[in-house]
Image 1: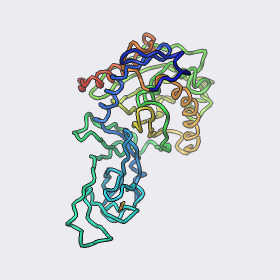
Image 2 (image 1 turned 180 degrees about the horizontal axis):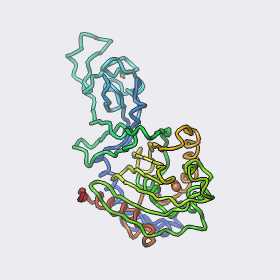
Image 3 (image 1 turned 90 degrees about the horizontal axis):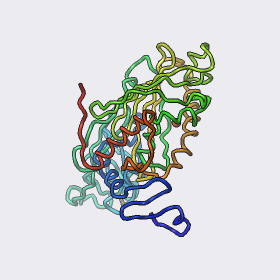
Image 4 (image 1 turned 45 degrees about the horizontal axis):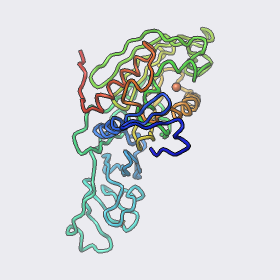
Length: 365
Ligand code: FES
Ligand SMILES: [Fe+2]
């Protein structure tokens, strides 16, 4: 970051650190985390959205083209080997990706197989596009740009295959924050009462009970509650008759480092599900893929979607206001509330070890 006279008053710089008010950013540590994240699967599209046109994706400041060729999701560099135009502007031509500019065609492995201006060069001119491993899991297309075998597995959402649940996809969106700031917001429990007062919390009932946090494989599992939520919304419509508020319990699976799955109770058998995976467009910009599911109020899609937009609209200015934009990898850089912040502290601890290159699965017993 460049320090200007305007910002110098509230920001001081020491070697390797930037100080922002009472927080500090360990530049080397944050950079290590950003680089290590390249070693994990990152979501690039909803599987259902990847149909007959290529998608342009920016991941780690790198432009990619994602396309389904012969039914199989593929990820290519988005820079044509001929004159560098975006292949994502091109078209899917059978099992090939064809450039919009001069029509070069690439096969599924990224090899140039057709040069329309000089067909006699086909098979003779050798040109290869960088490609990246691509899988589909949990309703999403994932890629990894490290060039190595990706670490950990992608996230999952059991309700996607459960006919008892109605699942919605929220249109992908981007926020000006880091991946870690964005994901942490979901299990930062003590904000619900304040940011979502009158919906998913109540300022008068802001206390957080102790809750259970544990690592399991590549996940952090959190069981927490009760959370006082209001019933005048579609999420809690099944318990509306019980009164103005309802005590919800929440069960999280945080898939390290960039996804989470939440089951939030909405009655005795009513189950509300939020499943989110996020990817770094850049250090301080994050793309978010969201599924909302439930096994009740199955005919109220529009209301569930509208509620999600209300909640996101409340969170966005708060999360985008956080400084530094990147989540500090030094636990002493921000202050933590004993018990209440246990989940987010565990997430930060794990990210710190990832930044340091210690990438280990937790026991699953
Ligand atoms: S730039 Fe792609 S074919 Fe020319
Ligand atoms: Fe929130």
